[in-house]
Structure formats: C-alpha cells, structure tokens
Image (cartoon, rainbow, N blue to C red; front, top):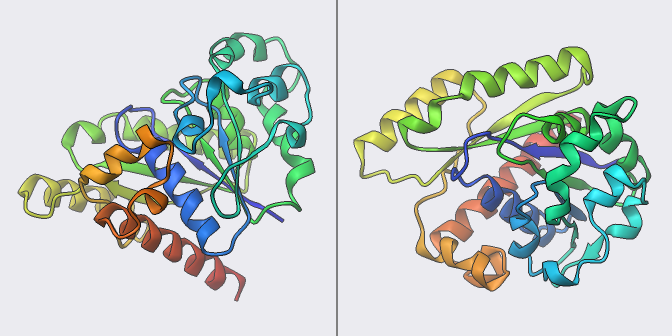
Length: 258
C-alpha cells in the first residue's frame, strides 16, 4: 500500500517543488518504488526530472478531467525507482472544469486507487494555491510535508495553510496528518535563519525535520539539467540534506509500524 504525501505551501519560491523532486529521488535511491505526481500547471516537477514537456502525450490533466487511466499516463524516469505522472499547461483550466464534476474533491483519490500496490511512496507536488487541485491532492493523501523558507515572509499565510489542512481533514479525509516541515534555504550563520527556524519549531513542535536544506548553488543548478540533486551532485550540501531528510522519513514510517 503506497503512502501518499503532498508537498504544500501556497507561497511560491520556498523550495516546495525542489523538495518534492529530491525527496522522491532520494527515496528511490534508498530502494523504494516512488511515483512523483505533478499537479502544478507550471510543470516544473516534470521538467526537473528530465521530462520534455513538448513530448508529453498524456498528463495528470487527462486523469482528472478526461478520466484517463493514471497507470497509462505514467512515465518512467532515468532515475532509480522513480516514475512521474507529468503536468502540462492544460492543467491551468482544470480548476474550473473540476467545479462541474460530482464529488470533485475526490477525483484524484479515486484515480490513484489502481496504483496503491505499485509504489511504496506517491509524492504529490501541489500548486502554490489553495484551490481545487490542492484540495484534491490533500483528499488523496495520507500526510502533508510543508517546505518553509527561513525568512519571515515565509511565515505569512502559514495559518491559512494549516486551516486548509484542518478543513480537508474534517470534511473529506480524516486520516490526513501533518508529516512535517522542511526548513529550506537555511543559513546557520544568519540570526534571521535561526530566529525563523525557532519560530517554525514553535508552531510545529516535534514536526520539523532534523536536517535543514542549506542555500546551495548546485541545488539551484540541477533543475536546468533535468536532474535531481542526487544525480547532479550527490555530495553537495543540498544533496546530502535531502538524502538525510528521506532517511528520517523512512525512520518515522518504520517506527509507526512498531
């Protein structure tokens, strides 16, 4: 049975997509079968794992709107144990089209049912908004990971995201939990980073991942090469951070089973 994790933050530029890509790739490198689902119309998650968006013949849009089989839309990436259900710009209109569908909040959940036995983890990269695509992903998920940039502006809107998660839990998905918070763009030399990290840990006691993701040039370069950091520069500070975050995630899941 796959564990489904949404990566969510309605503020852009906080490392959400970078985190989704690199946790997914790291889990794959650690021997887990992983599906990365891109439900952001920008499609950065798809290109970030080497998918040429011009060559995509079917996408998550077809799954949500045209009732296509999710299994048939999946593309195997060149990276170990990692597949992707890609996105295209067509998804930009899906919010309006979903509004006319019965049980619109559960379309993605129903579509993923056929994949539960094929993967250990399904990672969903959400758009930076709190619309129907986000609600679909949260309804389908077991948990949520929130990447948070270590700047004060990143704290703005945090309460709205927490409220949305709470509402989805109450209305559509009682099993939904906050998996944790990943601190991104962290610079331990700056008092600001340390202060924001302390504030986030106060908001989410016991939920912040031990390893923060540092500001790292190699991490910024990797998407332009269509590679997760693990395959672009495995021993960079960013690569090592995401590998440790993924190991911690596996540790948490192992302890939950005990």
